[in-house]
Amino acid sequence: MSINGDYPHPVTVNGFSCKNCTDVDYAKKHIDPSHPKSGPYNISADSDPSRTQAVTFGGALRDLSAAPSTASITTPAMPAPGQVLNITV
Image 1: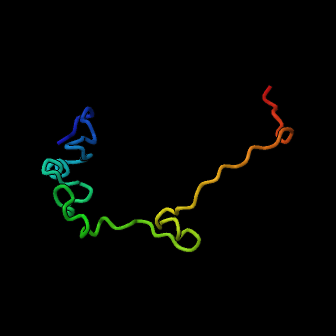
Image 2 (image 1 turned 135 degrees about the vertical axis):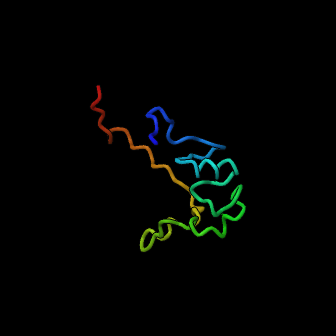
Image 3 (image 1 turned 90 degrees about the horizontal axis):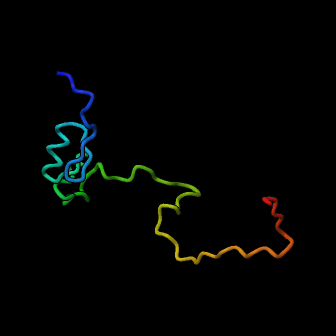
């Protein structure tokens, strides 16, 4: 069986991107085709082993995966007149 070149690939069913008929069957049941073990409406997503974090930072990057800090963001001070040269004239 050949697939016509006009076949829309991938198709979207219930908001899920589907690449084959199995994915379409899952999406019709409101199951995410990329994480089918999460169940309909992701009710068991916490126990789904495929939803683990793909990247674990270590060393100097370890703090990036933590909660965002509450430190205030400071804007740099404007340079004094005469410190910046504008050559776009």
